[in-house]
Image (tube, rainbow, N blue to C red; front, top):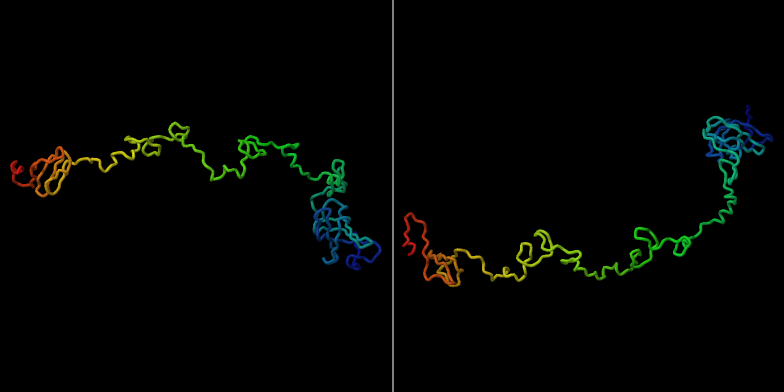
Length: 293
């Protein structure tokens, strides 16, 4: 193939009346068969680049020329470039070609939808817009949803106090100010939810009153009074002889001033004289007469 001298061309417009053929190289590759590409003539610098529309190259094949592909550039009488053939580095992906059919029009790989089920595209779009249809799902509609289904089934719900109804947002039963239902009898002995009675010491429970180890003591139990008689000690003491109000029956009394031992007290009275005297320890033997004196 011979190539002509294009030095007499400027800006892609030739000044001759016959088509010219030149050698070129793809400088910008197309993305698909509907995209244009750019080509640089190998005998000029890159500033001499021509844009080739898809109509002037895409119908020559089904593979895409890559950047750097060597091609033949033909300029027509108007100076427009055409690429009838290219070689070199090309895409390995072949795109479908040829006229489309059925509901599609145009050519592959970019056909258009022209009809749908025998109707034109414009007719389908104009006669099938999305339609509001909420009424069909409401009670009484042609495709009505269930109302007040069982608790475990989702459905439309009316508002009320029924087991399958929803509670209204302003229902007084939802307020903290409502009066709680009295139910204390259910927790008392014999009730449906009775609490334990007289449970073990470490467990809180209802308690009966009494003297048992798991009962509660009555508030007026005599054992709680300060007037109750305390447990008696066998021996009490004081300075001087005991008075009648000192001690309890059965007790002994020690006069710490004289070591005299009195008692035991009986019938609320002490004996008229001491029982004896306590003596300090001694190395000598103490006689009974010394104790009595």
